Amino acid sequence: MRIFQILIALIFCIIAAGFVFKSAIPYDLRWPLLGILIGISVLILKKMAGLKIFYFENSGFVFTIKYYHPAKKGIIFPLIEYPVDTVRTFKIERSFFTNTIIIDVSSKEKSRQIRIKVADINDGDYYKMANSLK
Image 1 (cartoon, helix red, strand yellow):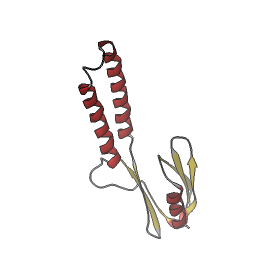
Image 2: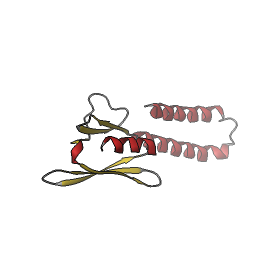
Image 3: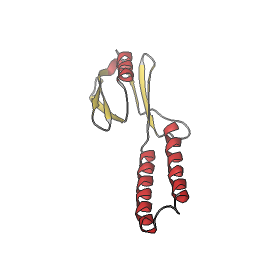
Image 4: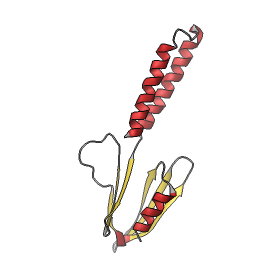
């Protein structure tokens, strides 16, 4: 939620700076700078719309993963909820912009692979999650 507030404050600071420096900007550069400002604002709003909170909980018998937007109100239902003994593998795929957590869950009837994209997860948090499932 804090990132959401920081991004909104950044948008307002950019708008305020535009109004303050309007008289200092040459007339020929006003429209291109306005276009750049609008482009940056759209990128920030797109980033805010894509924010997700990743919440992992292990009670010992059942592990739960909740994945939701920070502005969501009300009851948040789990994305995944399985018994711990059905987890075969729990690993992370690292790429340049996002990381993907891959969970292989098997039951008597079928096997399922679950992929969840997370933006930033450090090694310490990953090892805590992996060790809690063992």
